[in-house]
Picture 1 (spheres, rainbow, N blue to C red):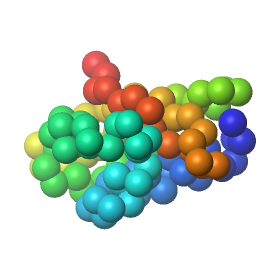
Picture 2: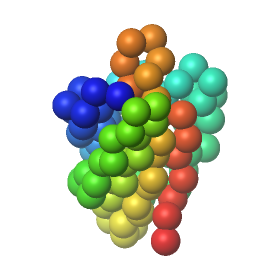
Picture 3: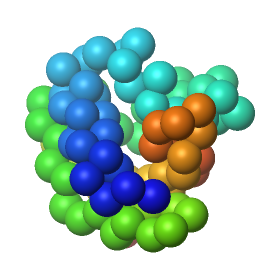
Length: 98
């Protein structure tokens, strides 16, 4: 995976979540995962007021990002796995961590 492109997509995704841009957020998920976006969003503080990219580990076939989402209800850190689909990085798995 291209490091610069992957980091840019991860940062743009975090910003879209903080803005509440559901269309952009959903577009960042793989086609197979999109139906699960509402369930994944339920683990986030409502509303999300900030999103901080803590780390991005770029690999050849897959990259892993840690993003901390903050809001009035506290903070949640999500680990997301990204892969190339349709010529761009997309999320293929996401889960809250510790």
